Every structure is written in C-alpha cells, then in structure tokens.
Length: 151
Image (cartoon, rainbow, N blue to C red; front, side):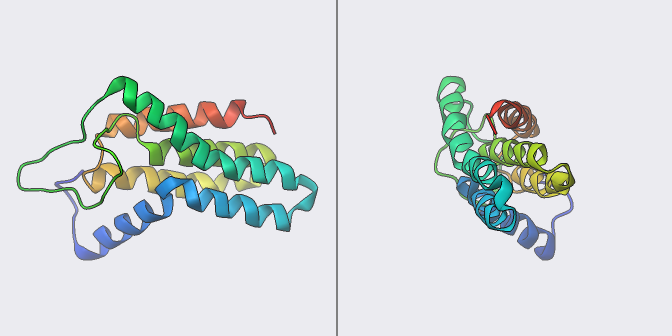
C-alpha cells in the first residue's frame, strides 16, 4: 500500500486520518459529545469513548510481547510518526474498532462509525507505518474489546 496510489491529496487524507486516530482521541471526543446528545445513555457513551485511549494502552502491552518492528521500505520512508518502533498490532486499528463496536452496541445506527474506523486503520499501511496484518490484528483485537467492555 505504501507503493501504490500516492498523490499529494491522497497522502494528505491519509495523514489527517492518522492524526485523528492518535491516542484514540477522536473516539474520546465522539463519546463525550454523544454523552451530551444522548444523556439517557451518557455513561455508556463515556465508557465507549474512553475505550479508545484504554485500547491504545492494552495494545502496547501486546506490542511489547510480540516486538515486531515497523516496515522498512528502501527509498520510501514512512509518511507519519509513531511513539514506538513496534508494529504489531496497529493501535489505531485497535482503538478505532473497539470504539466503533462499543458505540454501535449503544446505538445500532452508529454503525456508520465503522467507515471512520476502517479509514483510520487503512491509512496506516498506506502511510508505511504498518503491515496489513498489523491492521487486521488490531481490528480483530479492537472488535473483541468493543464487544466485552461493560456498557
């Protein structure tokens, strides 16, 4: 993905999605906003939003166990930054799918959030930050977290 379909506009979108997904912040913001919009489920929205940063932390534990280095492509440096040199699984994918799953449990009509989750996850190999298998593993781990978090 790092070697195909690159142009300035596409790379700008990928970088923006990567920034949105950092530390699970976009999901925290969505959760807080939804707690105000839907106060009947406010506590659940806050839990679902806070799951983003929590998933990042849990993901890092897995990274420390697996210790897979990030991809290195000669002549094609990554187009983003990361706080660690460890790649597996993708924290962006883990947090995004955890939150999208949890939020869809609260409100099934929130399933459109999987589009955002998929975009954030797909940008990681596109930017040269992850292997596709890192993203797939992160999506699976995140979905599992989103299904088990108590709401």
